Amino acid sequence: MEAIRNRIMAYRGSGKQGAVQLRRRKSKLYSKEGGSAGYRAGTAWDLFGEYGGLVLFTIAFRVLNCFMVQTSFVPDEYWQSLEVAHNMTFNYGYLTWEWNEGLRGFSYPLVFGGIYKILYWLGKDDVWFLIWIPRLAQSIFSSLADVRLYILVRKLENAELAKWVYFCQMCSWFTWFCATRTLTNTMEAVLGTFALYYYPIEGSRTKNSTKYLIFVALGFIIRPTAVILWIPLVFCQFLKDKKKIDLLIQQCLPVGLFTFGISFVIDRVFYGKWTFVQWNFLKFNVLQNMGAFYVSHPWHWYITQGFPVIIGTHFPFFIHGSILAPRRYRILLVAVIWTVFVYSMLSHKEFRFIYPVLPLCMVFCGFSITRLKWWKKPAVGFLIISNLLPALYTGLIHQRGALDIMSYIQQQCKAENMSTSLLVLMPCHSIPYYSHVHCRIKMNFLECPPDLSDHDSYVDEADLFYVSPMAWLNAEFYNTTQLPTHLVMFSVLEQEILQFLTAHHYMKTASVFHTQLPEGRVGSHIYMYERKT
View 1: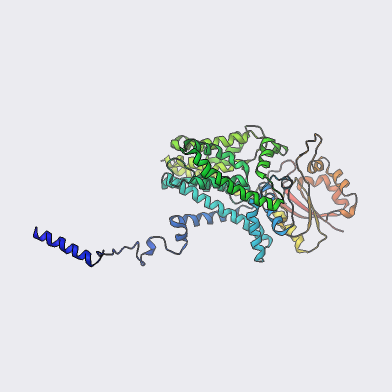
View 2 (view 1 turned 120 degrees about the vertical axis):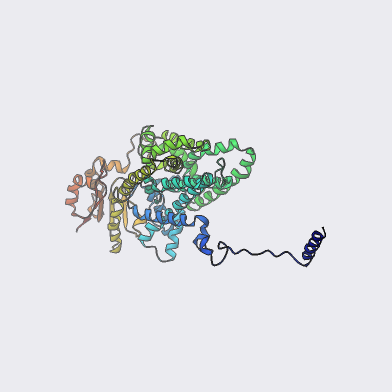
């Protein structure tokens, strides 16, 4: 007992003299010499945390993806983004009829307009930079969304499942085809993936209602139909949330006022008046269904063609994974089915409209591959090969002429001949415009605005031309002094207007390959003719 009492007294005495000194352990993890064992401070690893290597690899992959996609897809990747940005920045260009009717918002083009302005200030506004820097920026946005998808699944489940979801996302041929394009649908998919990362799915450690609502609102501002995908997801959260009034007043309302307020101000600046573009867009495309003016498809098109094409050979894995996935993921499956169903009700249909559902589908594909045992390696090899071929073909071969012909048009700028004039005798918006030329040469094309006045006899300029090309040309250029110096056309038109070309001394100066699948007014090659006086 005496010994114990002495030890207690010694301990109390030492407490009066100062704090107990702890022995410092020598650990390689924390020592300066052992910095390689963890991520290094002050480097990219410190910036991106434990996923730094994945972020850098994904960015490099999407940059490669960007330069390996050298074809055109749809006119909107230029005419609703880069052309608008070029007009905003350099005060010349062309705005399509949608901008006159207030159907499009300036928020997305403003991103590229900012890039163009920086290039202008740096004296680097060469046409090459104007074409590729916006696409590289979009590539980085897409790569960050890819990483977010991986992290989400890893925190919801485990690293093994996250690896296969990431693999499915990266080897998807349609994602490769679209992820680096300056399309509103591409940015919609990016913002949707970020919103999904913060969505309060059961068991999520990254859930944040305010952040996910911000990304949903941004997607709606850029493309109002983006809300279709999120209707079941938001409704599900509302039903489960015990504090519904707080959700509406403290989160939904402030997010809506903030994001829409910024959108209204941006559109007010560039339209010169207050314009509710989101309402105009939904009224035109959904309520009035005016998109059917361009192309109309049967109701089952997305089920029989659209969705099977964009998901490609991932489809059986998607079906298998939908059966295996835990119950909490059913809401994602409902969102995919709902989106396809709603878009099927609209007459005008395009593959890109349902592109934002692909990241959700890849979650189910990951569940499928994870559960495979003996067939895992064959399945992986099958997915790589079956997606690599269409990715390379659509990215490097199919419809490349629309971009290749622009280099010949750019040569007219180098000549610094202000008398140069160009007429594009192709279906409207078949090629990019001033964003891919960047000089003030006179250019015209066959226009095709829809009939907004509801006239039964309405025929747009492009359709009128193709009824009788020779008659249209003779009527348009009865005064030969107004003849353009250059004509651009698809090869299928050449024989129809050969007499006009010969009579007015036009000579073929360029021919570029466009597609191996010519159809209708679209030919296998694009020709440029120059008038020799």
